[in-house]
Length: 91
Image (tube, rainbow, N blue to C red; front, side):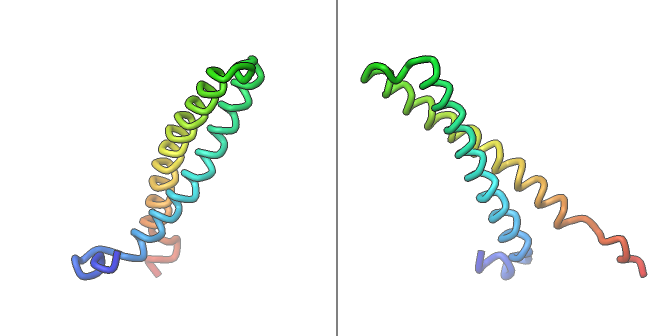
């Protein structure tokens, strides 16, 4: 990001969008992994060693995909809020 301003970009916008994406991605990954792991344990997959491997695999996959989805949504929301014009901009 230090080169962002040198290339004519907006470094503050980039930092804001990336930070929001990271924060929402972490929350989404946590929620996805928790739900997937709890569901797998609830149906009894954790009763065997192979079941534990499946529980971990499902939890990791759910965390990845939920985190990526929340990251994308957070960046889109942050971009749209950052780029909008204020209600008093014409004054």
